[in-house]
Image (cartoon, rainbow, N blue to C red):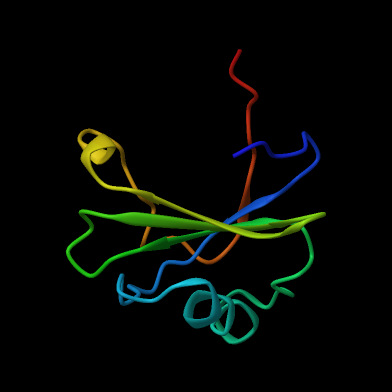
Length: 92
């Protein structure tokens, strides 16, 4: 998934049903994150047991949905923090 450098990432602190796909995850973006799902920002959703993360992004050609699960060991997910954008760093 290639993401532009100026994209902001929003982490949803409410657990989300990981069975949801693009349509099911784009719906809660407005009420939970106060953002537009077609804004071009990256939206990160965490499952109830915090073992999976789904990332939703809308680029120029449409939506992309990425799921991360085995990579989460040792990664802190700030679910108690208020909804806010986080800085993204490009890794080469």
